[in-house]
Amino acid sequence: MFSIIQAAGWPIWPLIICSVIALALVVERLSSLRAARVVPPKLLDEVLSVTRANLPAPDVVNKLADNSILGRVLAAGIRAVIADPRITEEALRGAFESAGRAAVHRMEKYLNTLGTIASSAPYLGLLGTVIGMIEIFASQSPSGSNPAQLAQGISIALYNTAFGLIVAIPALIFYRYFRGLVEQYTLDMEQAANRLVPHLLRFTSPRATAA
Image (cartoon, rainbow, N blue to C red):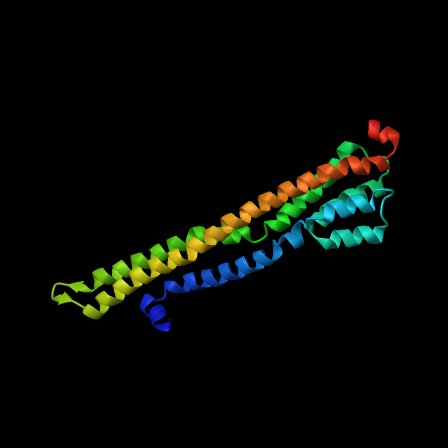
């Protein structure tokens, strides 16, 4: 590996840095976007069960918010009803939407960086290719070619092109995968909020509900 890096020249170092960053981001997102940490499958049913008779105590709501990203969204709606028992349906939905936007922002953390690496890695490889071509042309002279410089130029051109694609393709695959995962989780949270809204409106005053 070290000999390949030496043959590829200095243009490969930005690609190596990008590959390390991309790997770290993929591992972090795989951990953070697990279903258990975002939308636990039975969490909504548990919330509906706990709030069947009355609203939970603040410490229970805090535990719900710490449970997962979905838990934060559901806790935001419960807190809105606790804070204002006369809250309207529109205001309650607004509280859920505000919490949902924050949740989406949290789920999309680092995805722009990963997407940037996926799109820029081929260009970094192309930069190495251009530099390699310059080395190739520089090896040519009226008195003949320099075999060592010619071989170095070919190595720089080929290794950087290949390494740029090696970095870009997995990064793009994981970027698309995480984007789809975030969209699915967003839909799940919207559906959970829509189920919880009429359930929580039972605890508001009749005039607020009618409004």
